[in-house]
Length: 226
Image (tube, helix red, strand yellow):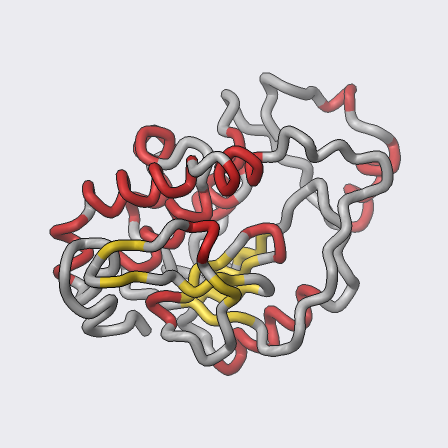
Protein backbone atom coordinates (compact mmCIF):
# COMPACT_ATOMS: atom_id res chain seq x y z
CA UNK A 1 0.00 0.00 0.00
CA UNK A 2 1.17 3.53 -0.71
CA UNK A 3 1.63 5.92 2.19
CA UNK A 4 0.62 8.67 -0.21
CA UNK A 5 -2.81 7.12 -0.60
CA UNK A 6 -3.64 5.50 2.72
CA UNK A 7 -2.30 5.29 6.26
CA UNK A 8 -2.50 2.63 8.99
CA UNK A 9 -5.33 4.49 10.71
CA UNK A 10 -7.39 4.36 7.51
CA UNK A 11 -7.45 0.58 7.32
CA UNK A 12 -10.63 -1.28 8.31
CA UNK A 13 -10.58 -3.61 11.29
CA UNK A 14 -11.46 -6.52 9.00
CA UNK A 15 -8.01 -6.06 7.45
CA UNK A 16 -5.87 -5.09 10.44
CA UNK A 17 -7.06 -8.07 12.47
CA UNK A 18 -5.33 -10.34 9.96
CA UNK A 19 -1.98 -9.23 11.41
CA UNK A 20 -2.78 -11.57 14.29
CA UNK A 21 -2.61 -14.47 11.84
CA UNK A 22 0.81 -13.63 10.41
CA UNK A 23 -0.22 -11.14 7.71
CA UNK A 24 2.15 -8.18 7.22
CA UNK A 25 0.62 -4.91 6.07
CA UNK A 26 3.43 -3.10 4.25
CA UNK A 27 3.45 0.53 3.17
CA UNK A 28 5.71 1.89 0.43
CA UNK A 29 6.78 5.43 -0.37
CA UNK A 30 5.32 7.22 -3.36
CA UNK A 31 2.56 6.18 -5.71
CA UNK A 32 4.02 3.11 -7.40
CA UNK A 33 0.64 2.16 -8.85
CA UNK A 34 0.49 -1.51 -9.85
CA UNK A 35 4.22 -1.92 -9.19
CA UNK A 36 3.83 -1.63 -5.42
CA UNK A 37 3.03 -5.34 -5.15
CA UNK A 38 5.79 -7.34 -6.78
CA UNK A 39 8.81 -5.01 -6.75
CA UNK A 40 8.88 -4.28 -2.98
CA UNK A 41 8.10 -7.92 -2.18
CA UNK A 42 10.91 -9.34 -4.32
CA UNK A 43 13.28 -6.76 -2.83
CA UNK A 44 12.28 -7.86 0.65
CA UNK A 45 12.22 -11.62 -0.05
CA UNK A 46 14.66 -12.25 -2.94
CA UNK A 47 15.00 -15.99 -2.26
CA UNK A 48 11.29 -16.73 -1.77
CA UNK A 49 8.42 -17.76 -3.99
CA UNK A 50 6.18 -14.74 -4.55
CA UNK A 51 2.51 -14.97 -5.52
CA UNK A 52 0.62 -11.87 -6.62
CA UNK A 53 -3.11 -11.19 -6.78
CA UNK A 54 -5.28 -8.17 -7.47
CA UNK A 55 -7.06 -6.42 -4.62
CA UNK A 56 -10.29 -5.81 -6.52
CA UNK A 57 -11.04 -9.44 -7.38
CA UNK A 58 -12.45 -12.36 -5.38
CA UNK A 59 -10.51 -15.62 -5.77
CA UNK A 60 -11.48 -19.24 -5.07
CA UNK A 61 -9.74 -20.73 -2.07
CA UNK A 62 -7.83 -23.24 -4.23
CA UNK A 63 -6.08 -20.68 -6.49
CA UNK A 64 -2.75 -20.66 -4.59
CA UNK A 65 -2.66 -24.44 -4.24
CA UNK A 66 -3.01 -24.82 -7.99
CA UNK A 67 -0.16 -22.40 -8.64
CA UNK A 68 2.06 -24.34 -6.25
CA UNK A 69 1.13 -27.68 -7.82
CA UNK A 70 2.28 -26.49 -11.23
CA UNK A 71 5.38 -24.90 -9.69
CA UNK A 72 6.36 -28.27 -8.23
CA UNK A 73 6.47 -29.65 -11.79
CA UNK A 74 8.02 -26.55 -13.38
CA UNK A 75 10.13 -25.01 -10.59
CA UNK A 76 12.03 -22.53 -12.76
CA UNK A 77 8.99 -21.15 -14.54
CA UNK A 78 6.52 -18.34 -13.87
CA UNK A 79 3.08 -19.89 -13.27
CA UNK A 80 -0.20 -18.11 -14.01
CA UNK A 81 -3.88 -18.95 -13.72
CA UNK A 82 -4.63 -16.76 -16.71
CA UNK A 83 -2.27 -16.25 -19.62
CA UNK A 84 -2.37 -15.22 -23.24
CA UNK A 85 -0.39 -16.55 -26.18
CA UNK A 86 1.66 -13.78 -27.75
CA UNK A 87 0.95 -13.73 -31.47
CA UNK A 88 3.46 -12.59 -34.07
CA UNK A 89 3.70 -12.57 -37.85
CA UNK A 90 7.04 -11.95 -39.57
CA UNK A 91 8.41 -10.59 -36.33
CA UNK A 92 5.55 -8.12 -35.78
CA UNK A 93 3.51 -8.47 -32.61
CA UNK A 94 -0.24 -8.68 -33.23
CA UNK A 95 -2.50 -6.26 -31.30
CA UNK A 96 -2.84 -7.33 -27.67
CA UNK A 97 -6.64 -7.46 -27.94
CA UNK A 98 -6.37 -10.22 -30.55
CA UNK A 99 -4.21 -12.58 -28.46
CA UNK A 100 -5.93 -15.85 -27.57
CA UNK A 101 -5.89 -17.65 -24.27
CA UNK A 102 -2.68 -19.61 -23.79
CA UNK A 103 -2.82 -23.35 -23.23
CA UNK A 104 -0.75 -25.33 -20.79
CA UNK A 105 1.43 -26.45 -23.74
CA UNK A 106 1.93 -23.00 -25.28
CA UNK A 107 5.62 -22.18 -25.85
CA UNK A 108 6.89 -20.80 -22.49
CA UNK A 109 8.58 -17.85 -24.21
CA UNK A 110 5.27 -16.77 -25.72
CA UNK A 111 3.04 -17.47 -22.71
CA UNK A 112 2.09 -14.05 -21.34
CA UNK A 113 0.90 -14.13 -17.68
CA UNK A 114 -2.06 -11.88 -16.86
CA UNK A 115 -1.88 -10.71 -13.28
CA UNK A 116 -5.59 -10.67 -12.54
CA UNK A 117 -5.73 -14.46 -12.28
CA UNK A 118 -2.84 -14.76 -9.84
CA UNK A 119 0.82 -15.30 -10.76
CA UNK A 120 3.59 -17.22 -8.99
CA UNK A 121 7.21 -16.10 -9.47
CA UNK A 122 10.06 -18.42 -8.44
CA UNK A 123 13.20 -16.89 -6.89
CA UNK A 124 15.45 -15.33 -9.51
CA UNK A 125 12.77 -15.42 -12.21
CA UNK A 126 13.23 -11.79 -13.20
CA UNK A 127 16.22 -9.87 -14.54
CA UNK A 128 17.64 -7.28 -12.10
CA UNK A 129 16.20 -4.41 -14.15
CA UNK A 130 12.71 -5.61 -13.19
CA UNK A 131 13.11 -3.94 -9.80
CA UNK A 132 14.03 -0.54 -11.27
CA UNK A 133 10.75 1.27 -10.69
CA UNK A 134 11.85 4.40 -12.54
CA UNK A 135 12.71 2.33 -15.61
CA UNK A 136 9.43 0.43 -15.37
CA UNK A 137 7.50 3.70 -15.22
CA UNK A 138 9.42 4.99 -18.22
CA UNK A 139 8.51 2.12 -20.53
CA UNK A 140 5.41 0.47 -19.03
CA UNK A 141 3.74 2.96 -16.67
CA UNK A 142 0.37 1.20 -16.76
CA UNK A 143 1.32 -2.29 -17.98
CA UNK A 144 3.19 -4.13 -15.26
CA UNK A 145 2.31 -7.47 -16.90
CA UNK A 146 4.30 -6.38 -19.95
CA UNK A 147 7.24 -5.19 -17.86
CA UNK A 148 7.48 -8.40 -15.84
CA UNK A 149 7.10 -10.61 -18.93
CA UNK A 150 10.01 -8.90 -20.67
CA UNK A 151 12.02 -9.00 -17.43
CA UNK A 152 11.45 -12.76 -17.20
CA UNK A 153 12.43 -13.37 -20.82
CA UNK A 154 15.63 -11.35 -20.34
CA UNK A 155 16.50 -13.67 -17.47
CA UNK A 156 15.77 -16.80 -19.50
CA UNK A 157 12.54 -17.58 -17.64
CA UNK A 158 9.47 -18.85 -19.44
CA UNK A 159 5.87 -19.05 -18.23
CA UNK A 160 3.19 -21.71 -18.05
CA UNK A 161 -0.53 -21.58 -17.46
CA UNK A 162 -2.34 -23.69 -14.88
CA UNK A 163 -3.87 -26.49 -17.00
CA UNK A 164 -7.26 -26.67 -15.32
CA UNK A 165 -10.03 -24.50 -16.76
CA UNK A 166 -10.05 -21.13 -15.05
CA UNK A 167 -12.87 -20.16 -12.77
CA UNK A 168 -14.63 -16.85 -13.24
CA UNK A 169 -12.96 -14.23 -11.05
CA UNK A 170 -15.64 -11.83 -9.90
CA UNK A 171 -15.05 -8.30 -8.58
CA UNK A 172 -16.24 -7.70 -5.01
CA UNK A 173 -19.86 -6.59 -4.63
CA UNK A 174 -20.21 -2.88 -5.32
CA UNK A 175 -16.76 -2.55 -6.89
CA UNK A 176 -16.60 -0.01 -9.70
CA UNK A 177 -14.12 -1.18 -12.32
CA UNK A 178 -15.21 1.32 -14.94
CA UNK A 179 -11.83 3.06 -14.70
CA UNK A 180 -9.77 -0.12 -14.41
CA UNK A 181 -6.48 -0.18 -16.29
CA UNK A 182 -7.75 -2.88 -18.62
CA UNK A 183 -10.05 -0.40 -20.34
CA UNK A 184 -7.15 1.88 -21.25
CA UNK A 185 -4.62 -0.88 -21.85
CA UNK A 186 -6.76 -3.23 -23.93
CA UNK A 187 -9.63 -1.24 -25.44
CA UNK A 188 -7.62 1.96 -25.76
CA UNK A 189 -4.54 0.24 -27.18
CA UNK A 190 -2.20 1.44 -24.43
CA UNK A 191 -0.79 -2.07 -23.99
CA UNK A 192 0.29 -2.17 -27.63
CA UNK A 193 2.22 1.09 -27.34
CA UNK A 194 4.00 -0.09 -24.19
CA UNK A 195 4.77 -3.52 -25.66
CA UNK A 196 6.39 -1.99 -28.74
CA UNK A 197 8.29 0.56 -26.66
CA UNK A 198 9.84 -1.96 -24.28
CA UNK A 199 10.61 -4.51 -27.02
CA UNK A 200 12.35 -1.86 -29.09
CA UNK A 201 14.45 -0.65 -26.17
CA UNK A 202 15.59 -4.11 -25.06
CA UNK A 203 15.87 -5.59 -28.57
CA UNK A 204 19.64 -6.33 -28.39
CA UNK A 205 19.33 -8.07 -25.00
CA UNK A 206 16.26 -10.03 -26.11
CA UNK A 207 18.01 -11.25 -29.25
CA UNK A 208 20.98 -12.26 -27.12
CA UNK A 209 18.78 -14.72 -25.20
CA UNK A 210 17.23 -16.08 -28.41
CA UNK A 211 13.94 -14.18 -28.28
CA UNK A 212 12.86 -12.34 -31.41
CA UNK A 213 9.08 -11.90 -31.07
CA UNK A 214 8.23 -8.40 -32.22
CA UNK A 215 11.83 -7.64 -33.17
CA UNK A 216 11.52 -7.92 -36.94
CA UNK A 217 11.31 -10.79 -39.46
CA UNK A 218 12.20 -14.24 -38.21
CA UNK A 219 10.98 -16.96 -35.88
CA UNK A 220 9.01 -15.69 -32.88
CA UNK A 221 11.40 -17.44 -30.50
CA UNK A 222 14.52 -19.27 -31.55
CA UNK A 223 15.23 -20.62 -28.09
CA UNK A 224 12.34 -20.63 -25.62
CA UNK A 225 13.34 -19.64 -22.09
CA UNK A 226 13.38 -22.43 -19.53
